[in-house]
Length: 503
Image (cartoon, rainbow, N blue to C red; front, side):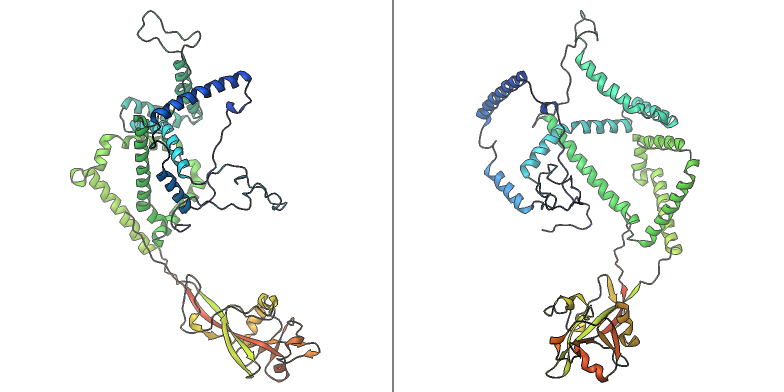
């Protein structure tokens, strides 16, 4: 089971913290409150015992299948690993300058995945989510002109806010007064029902308990209505997500670099224009026109004209023709006027051929090809004699860097300056550069008394702080057991296809 799935947008960070809001129940209780709480708990326990005796069949309890499924899910989905800051006793392990991570489990409750907990949370959520669907349904009725008087009233208020933006803070306050507080007051002071002897009066003590939004009972019709609306909302989100990937993403994900580059250039120019000239645009009129246009387009008759098949609606046919013409014009412009035919970038990569001296045969044996020169001052050499270079034995096993491909067919020995260029560039010391040869760079060994041969490894002091030129003579007696030369080859950036066409 892969830990990550590409091209997906998933929260792979820490889990969302569980919100806990302190309530008045957390305050210390008086003796009278404790007694009332004790009596209430006894009453609830008595009711619960009666329900268990009435409905307490084995099917209503957690069955063996549920426990088995929960165990399987806990094995399939691994728990999150605790980090360095997840333990509450990690204060001794934290450095003084490291701040505390207040998002860790030491400070915030973050339960792991649990099938029973997820089921319980879904039932609680579904019993309380109805208010969102009520609001969604009222907005749909408002913008689909189910009640034209309500839609026109909304447009009147919207026009007033567009013309007088300073009245915008009044909107949430009016919603609080007339949508929450006034109905709550009327619920405590209800008008008499079918009793002409009593007149409606809002003076005096309240005659009804305060209203409270209660969750719907489980397994009721309202509970299943919420499940139906939740199901449809999930389908709507999936449909919008797929539509965005089909109609919007191909323009912005650079699958067609010419088209996306054109849109990027236009967006950049518009951003610069908005930055410098936005104060000249009548934003009140723009907002007013946009709101009226969007609300008018949602009228059922206009929707019927826009969504009807082309043979039965000339308006739909003309709109589709204009959209197709704009799309073809954009494609033609990007094809002829946007040039992205620059050659792919090229780089030069290197590999070092390393050889080891065999004192028994008095010859140099091919060892391997390594990405580092393995010089006397390299970290691998300084780590100890047991650390050997890493690489491959054959040229054919050398691979190009990721995202790059070979340009030249063969490798070439770097003979510029006999290897002096890369030796000076890396600051390599304790080596001899062979001039006029095949580009080999030899180790130099220094004994206790000055110069030691290839067999005098016991008197090695370490690499010298510089390099020397050599071509024979006495320097050959000071060479160490390793030599290397640099090979180079050209690579170019590989292009990845996968152009997508907008829907």
